[in-house]
Image (cartoon, rainbow, N blue to C red):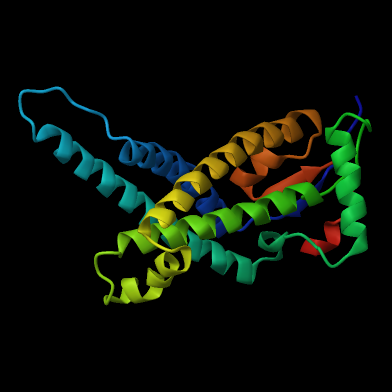
Length: 227
């Protein structure tokens, strides 16, 4: 019997893991309720107030999910401060980062049979950074519309500039809507890639988001980022 040795690398704090799974739930809830808000269903019932009452409930669920998401993000920021594994963002200032990105890209395009081992490969780092940009756009435009009726309240003062910068509330809604579709497309690709990395490359992408650590048989080239 061959004994296999693996090295444990602690990556993700409980704050990031909680935020991750909260984000998964929130994105699903926000997308479904947001889609219903954009195109409300018509309920053919004897009582005509059923439809507006239902839409009020949908809007309230949408708002609760948005606030829960933002609360989780505060914990994610705290994890970013205290744990190096929560800070695996792109090293755009390093030439080696682009070489590694090309190496991983050629592997994903089936041109190379493998790529260098990473704790978090450069393409993944870039995609997650891009996700946070999309999330920031959603938060800003969402709260800009939410506080539109209260322009002089603290929230209106904090987010009202978004509507003014984009031109009007309709453009905020337009940007909010299509950014949501971009996030859903990211989520689909993300799900495929992490499952692929888990089972085909042994990168422990899925399990690490539960346990916080990766048990790897190889030494990743970016191990110093968490040491």
